[in-house]
Length: 126
Image 1 (tube, rainbow, N blue to C red):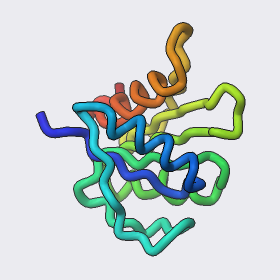
Image 2 (image 1 turned 180 degrees about the vertical axis):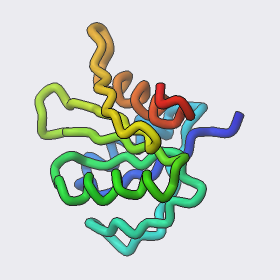
Image 3 (image 1 turned 90 degrees about the vertical axis):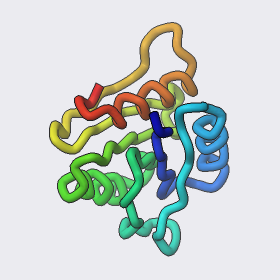
């Protein structure tokens, strides 16, 4: 099975570095580089991407990336709120557009993040 390809977008540099380190530490995931021109750029090339990971700090960017799911039905989106002290994570999958909040008791924030990415990458949406 090929690794889950994750594109990290619209996230502050420190947060992006932390999230990328968590993802890159997994044997079943890899971080891919997008074709966008910089922060706030929603025109990333999402071909070859399974999951887009975006920060909830900018509502407009979240809406743009959720919109990409309509034209790229295989694309999952994971929204993280790093400003929330609980670090809420929600995953979306195009054909359902129903959020799945991952935050099971006993799981650390990195474990919740990874579980959300895997859920968003699944054809059934986890």
